[in-house]
Image 1 (cartoon, helix red, strand yellow):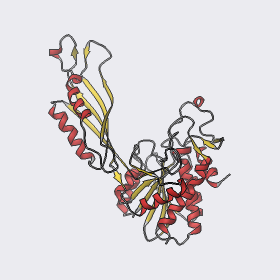
Image 2 (cartoon, one colour; image 1 turned 30 degrees about the vertical axis):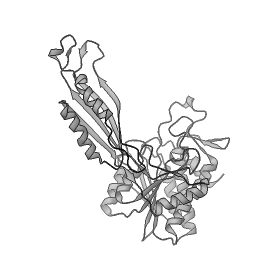
Image 3 (cartoon, one colour; image 1 turned 135 degrees about the vertical axis):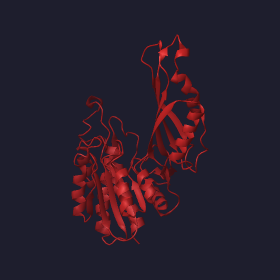
Image 4 (cartoon, one colour; image 1 turned 30 degrees about the horizontal axis):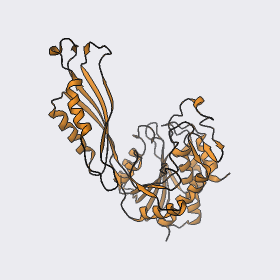
Length: 376
């Protein structure tokens, strides 16, 4: 078997359900230290973070990934044990195969090959791993970025190994992501009997016009390759379960996915203006998941386009779609960010898998990126 396949299988065998790293980073650290990398553990709470660097002065290229995975669900739903990697018909099955232990393994193999071939490369090449990407994303890259900002780490380029391809390896290059902003809204009323509405105040009735206005609003027309900003109400809860009781409180969860026309603080202010205008008695808790980021034309985007075109046989689609990734914490440090990884069709699903051929090509993709950016 190939190096990258062997390492991917070894990582899948570690039951690293978020935020438990389950020994993945220790395995990787041993290999990279042997290759000449300086490694630093940055643990916060229950989360493990690994920072491995090779080189010195000059631009820094960071490979960004995570060793945690989502829970596999019922074992009986899988054709084989999710933590016992199995190859069937040229496909590797196991939790994390695509998201993203395959990419992490490819990172490691590519880094080993790069420093062996170019021991005196310019600048720095680095690997940043966390075990808190699939979970709350509080004590992972978000916290590491605060450490980097405090000590003045220079980060120029970042490649995230998230599974970005759609039908075949290299057909899509992620050049940005929308921001994400979540709200927990509580609207207070007065509980009472439905037969005596004059003695109660129904928070559902009061909130509906405001919620309808927020849901119907067209926030913008998009931004370059970004789609328009979207607000989606995801949960509404009120009442005691009885049909003859006016509830005293309503709770609503909603989320905004927003493009660079906005910052989170602006959207919060816009939403609260609507709530106040409708006279609601309310409280709202905001969670800023991350600001949007976008990588314009430059050395990183050009290198990624050329490398992927060589592997896929045609230029990739350049996209800002999808959800979000840990690159949202690296971009504010001044780094240009792209995402390059395997096909994402099976991620978070039962029988998650990756093509063995794609997996074995990934180290060459990442190696080509390093050589384009860090060798003369």
